[in-house]
Length: 254
Image (cartoon, rainbow, N blue to C red; front, side, top):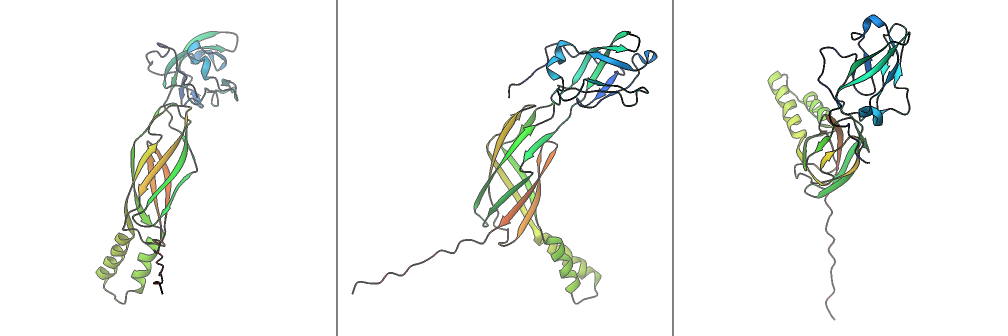
């Protein structure tokens, strides 16, 4: 998707209290600039915002009290402060300011990163990312998350219940030992395709590769959370049993 940019100099120095403020799709009417004129009934956007009109909604939604008055712009409207013309009841017009705040929003398909393989084997998976926010998102070439056994907490509690002892210290030590055992170590992911800045409105496939740790137990499942900027993506790892080599016997010549 072609990148859209506001024209240079469109954003002005932010006043103390802007008339509208918030993320692009929910700019709330503060009612402090031009408050004596009432609630706005129409707006005229400058050329700098002409390409950021939300086609599915009117730019202005007003209410009599002003409590629900909203200005809606496209989701990828760059953060900054802009000047717009506002028309009030009676035809009075005034120039007011709009403070567009940053909004991070990432759409990921599928919603969970799933990997499978034997301990020590390589595994890979792909994600489709779409930046639905209004700021660029930096995708690093290396990503890391911790893994924990899906049954780790249940196994630790079961070990504590089964322990034939009333010694509290021993019971607690047993539980913590099993929890530590359930930690699968760090999952280190290499971004072989798709690293770099993901611009607002851009879609990109992310190809991730890793070598599964030898600490992982075959037949177990592990989970973690992968951070991409301010976003979190669920990770599921299914650990398979290592393939057993097949040997064949050859008969000697008679």
